[in-house]
Length: 327
Image (tube, rainbow, N blue to C red):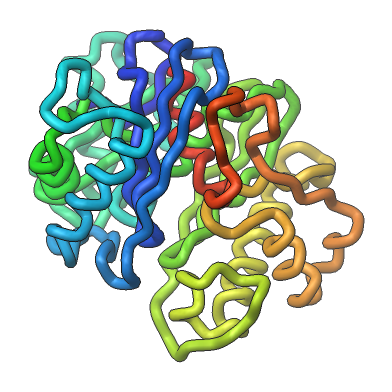
């Protein structure tokens, strides 16, 4: 099972993202074409609790039903021919790391054990029992930078089994932010913020190369009320939520400036937190560059075909499936 997005053109033309807020499904005919149809099946708070321990799908029956409803919403029937799909899973269920090596063998069979050995001290689970994928980001005579993705095998099986019990076959599995990054089509440096009810991930890409991937888990605390924050995020207090997200963005912006010698001109928003809400979060938490930096949705209108009705679905929630379908 491949955990990394690759533009091979061979990935299934269906995708669904399983997130704490709900299951989102989409279809695209061509890898470089727009989404032809989209649908979303919401989930009750607590049905999906992503993490690195078993029990991610706390209400497995509800998740299976939501998968089936979302895919039926784009006219795909369970147990039908052509029911292979790409699954997008929460960032909190995986570990994504950028690793540097002096050298790395070209053969997968020789390189993978080296990557696994490095991961042993970096992830809080047994690497030998995990699914691991890697991809070389850059290579020079003295340095090889690798993007590595690891997920406990029993966690991966949770998501795959739910999809199979809904009547579909997993053709690929991708972490949420890595899937969304495939939708970044510009070559200049880009800062992406993927915020949801259980975590926030910041990522920086330049011409298809990942420079930063940092995830912060958000733990449930007291309920707060703010109309600019999606309902599923209300399990966190507004102060705690906005502080964590603003802090994550500030760290990413500092890394952007240190690495690229200039601040980002635009922040791209993915996930259930809309661009407007993210802008509100940043300005409300004293983010000094909030007025100077433009915040916009990762997906624009060109990502959707005439049949993709998105009025009831936050555009950011479609970033993962849209990126997955570009492969």
